[in-house]
Length: 384
Image (cartoon, rainbow, N blue to C red; front, side, top):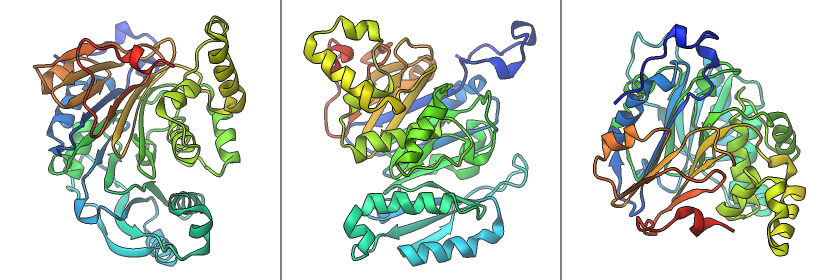
């Protein structure tokens, strides 16, 4: 069931020009039932040829029930002597309840991997900055402050009751290194990277995370410069050397800061063409013209498929003309999103429905809400 191996004579430009690669996989149980990482690892292994070993990772929600009310900061140390400085920063700005090195299995597969620790933190509600801006905004500012300090350390995950495990390697290698199958959660996303124009390094592997927003991405964001400038004007800073990072910050900006529903955020990131807007009824034209004007800096140009997740929700979205693949499926209480149908069939042979989503239309799974029946149409259900 695996993809055919890429052959040199089929690719005269070299592997770095296989633009439709990168593997995405997401599984969500909408009842909140937690399950191990076995299926997500198995599915990603099935799409091994979509990556070239320069990055892979997993995000899991519901994995830290014993620290469910804490922000779980995962910190990557590229400079080991940065640890005392980082821990002093965290103690000065948060209540530190527990910290430990992220468990991992030493392996000759990885040469000089960075040191990775996790810190379970709570916010002091009496701080003036917290009272003025709110708890989540305070956390975002502190994450950006540390990540731009040049100390050789990066907070690459910062949500509650969720974790990100990523690095340079194939998915099965990263899964073995972090013992991914030993974790349990109700929502998993995963990525296998095939970088084309950005470096392959531990911090540049997907998923990208801010608070509990995570993004895995296949494609290329040609509007990265404009998107980055917009986000930096609003307090975000890109430090991970890859275009996908703007997607995580855009999701946070649109859906947390501005409280826009997913369906509207999707129409900002992957808007209809102007020719389509002109054919719409007047009230819809007014809406889309306004979105285009207000959020022009967050229009995502270029081919892309993303799976965006946060607590209680998993979202699949492609660019408006579907230049990167996405398959959706429903089986029982689980929603599956994947670059291919094969890994879904591998982990769940009996499915209620499998389909190809419409370009620019979000596929949404929500905790506590039943999945749509097989005969219902997602595109119609979420069209504005």
